[in-house]
Length: 356
Image (cartoon, rainbow, N blue to C red):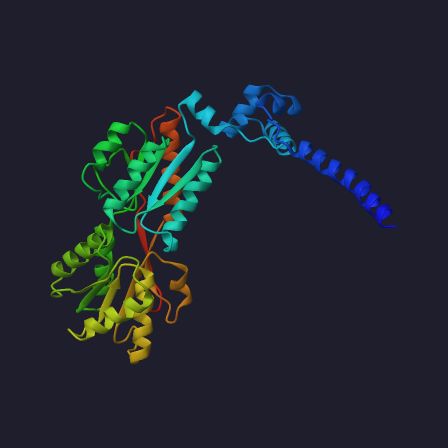
């Protein structure tokens, strides 16, 4: 009985083992070539290549047929071979201070969407608001032979401008305005945004102004413009609190508490809406009436500006459009065309709400 049971186990094991071996053979990787995709789609290999690298140049029906064949066959393009043959990686890099702030994410989203339509992928780097980290990322991305680069701001570590000009790839600087870009620029004048904030608050009858912001170059320009306009209007010296990069609402609240220990401002302009939200929280805690006793103004017009109570007056910038316009500039260069404009000022707009 025992021998029979053993025989049954052996006989059962034999086909099971064969099935495993067969499965291994079936799952062995098979190389699907571009020619296989072309045959399945009923097009030429050149058409498949165009579908991958320049999809906007194909008729929708043709593009759909190629993509269906790619999906059916599981074709994965050899990007390394393609980039060596064409001297193009079809990768664009973007460097931002942080993705924790949704305003930069909007710019990245606008950039990625426009580039993807033309078959480009996006490589993302964060600097943490450190110029030396930006320089390291620039070197890393150039080493990976990216086709183009998008930077945040126009202030860079020593040597970065020269390295990028020698690299010979298209570069777009964003989130600021300059008459002398490395290559191209799209953004707005941060100092003018600061002047506009002061002009607005002074027109509302405010005479004792304060500013809360970070240490980065763009925030410093907003402060400079804010101060200049206040001096022009004779309102006296602006009280200033400087916070670390990516400051939280809690740090904004603490900054207001510090300012109130130094004076009695009747208006405060914050370099972003996250800080401004913290200021409003601190006003509620101290029972400071907004805007009667203190007007509060933010920057960037994040979703929180319309959701917080009281709603926040803020300066709106066209973050998504900044990304899509940067993509259009890069694509013009990459296709051998001159961009319509090398320097684009998108401006800004004050969105008036209850806080000021």
